[in-house]
Image (cartoon, rainbow, N blue to C red):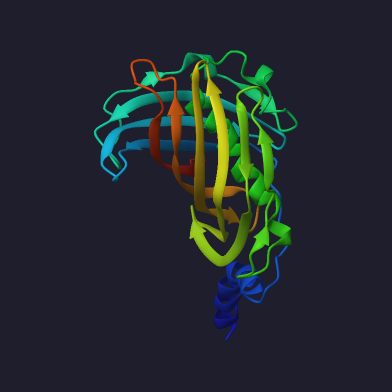
Length: 262
């Protein structure tokens, strides 16, 4: 009898928070971790023709460590790939991002923040902005209820002097619970459709639509991200590309995964 009670107790410890979520309640964090967490971020960009034919793929990878109120980037690389879903065939280290550290309060959309970045380093800027996106969505966790879409932080985001990204309508939905890295997790879905942006990179100008969505696994116990995904499709016009006759159609498929490594 005693053994049965012990077995039941062990079983219920991880299940109780999950039951709360499925009942529509967000359980409090057992203990919010303020220690460091290390992540690996992989983003793939696939250029597409008007009918969907692949026209080139490259992969951006990075590691970063988060503390309670700060983060630091290391080992950022960019390299070509043989195609969608394929690993990079070579990698070039982006030395200007090595050791980039800042507080959460930093304005990461200001031009001055990226003063050490080359003018065309848009994919590397996206690393910073994507990490901020994942973090900000998790900040909305306490407002979520099971299977009920909640509006996220929508509207215009000014990208310094480079342009503006307009999130038309971000929706966050708590889908339930799952397991990642041995942790019971909230499973959050997000999507934002029919967004628009204008970006200038030197003489090159881009005006396009963006549709993006993905999922985030957040530890119930610590409220730290364990895993995240991003899928984005961009369609628009690119102008002033050297060697190209006039404005050209732009179609990009972007996929990313954020993995906690320790």
